[in-house]
Length: 295
Image (cartoon, rainbow, N blue to C red; front, side, top):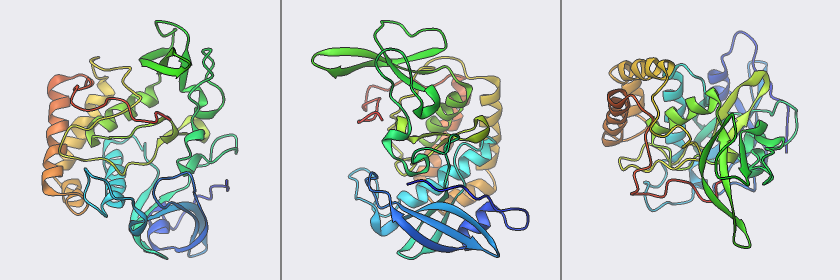
């Protein structure tokens, strides 16, 4: 399923459109583990495509409180905006045809093909096994028959590719991915898969599916370990400092409406730790470092 993205012109912001517009369900994204509905939303003559995830459609998880994934998705968007990177499509919490849920702007792939805004694992390519990354994911991930990544790539780890054969999983040494890696460290993202990377028009890159985030325990699982232990960029330090200040003000109040006080304190602590170390985090060894399936 694919539909053109219709961004509202001046007069109604995207957030207002998503929060206040009339939702019309067009279909269900079957590949998603939770209920994800593809919708049209319209308000005051403006329209857009979006995804709506009702709380009643959330699958219970053993390590997250029931009925909280939608709020966590909105919290991830708020943090991304506070960092100034715009890495998460506009996301709001609202009532809809099936009750309260999150509503997120649909992101159309730059070539108009595929289900980029759905969370479909096929939206980002895990590579062909020969070092070529393919069209999906704009060449951000690949499996290569080598011991070391080539120029312009970062190693993640070895992956089984069948019949006892392994290949090196790599991701692009891309500034957009590096920003996402920092965001994931802040929100403690337990599920950064390849299918959650959405290239968009104009060279932008978005991340979606942030329901399993903000846990008080270290649960960071990601395909973006290529910079583990390396120094943060000056841009990342600036963004983290902005976020630290925002968490002490209006953003902290807003997140307090979406996650628990303990989770908010843990978020502040993660930001402080990143600034103190000045480096990208490394796998803790206490939790699987790479999500499964990876794409």
